[in-house]
Amino acid sequence: MADVTSAPDAATLERPDTEQGVLLEVPWVTLVWDDPVNLMSYVSFVFIDYFHYSKSKAQRLMMQVHHEGKAVVSSGSREEMERDVQAMHSYGLWATLQKGDA
Image (cartoon, rainbow, N blue to C red):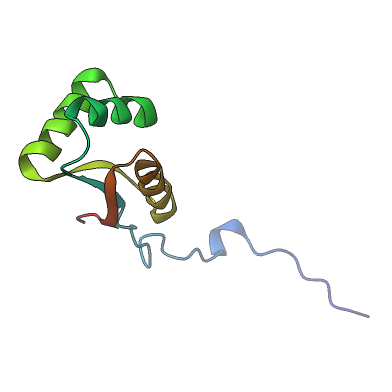
């Protein structure tokens, strides 16, 4: 006959250290680059239409693209940023993705 054992007492259960081995994933970012083709008003429109940003946020990002040559317009998982880059390309904007700062 098989031996019947009781479940271990809750106080004796070992739990892996939740802080050990937890790595925070560095987010990815979508960059939109300045280009000589698209009007500033169109770039703002894209940010409002696709990202649903407010007019003021869209204009601020557009001005950053215009003056600094690029702006981070979204951040998240790599898959999400690949989707956003493709969307920016479909609007005719120059966009890339890269790992964000930790």
